Image (cartoon, rainbow, N blue to C red; front, side):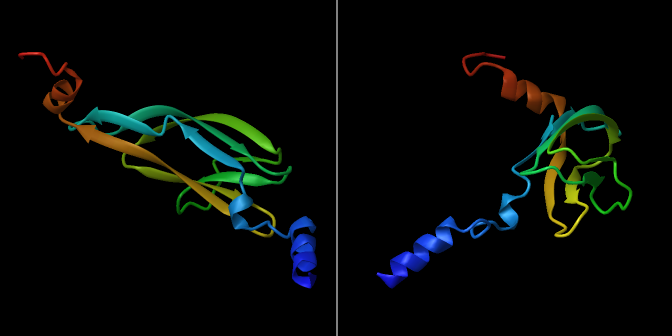
Length: 129
């Protein structure tokens, strides 16, 4: 009986179930990939970033391994559009600026493809050409 009481108190205590996986509640980027010809140097793209935090807190968006933020906000919900010329697949990080310094990541993938392979994939299975 005592174990049941302790278990119920632990479950009802605020913060008893919180861990690093609760932050952020949502972090997305769209589009998340760019398909381009093999010979192209990179991809011009406008990426929309969206994040939602459990509560308002200063959070900044970074390119992986860069110290200067691309954008910062102290709102619980943020939506921003940024333009990039991307040469390789790139990881973006959302970092909480105040302790504890939580971090979340999303990747923008740069996909290179040969035109013939694209045509083969897109044509109907019943097509004779």
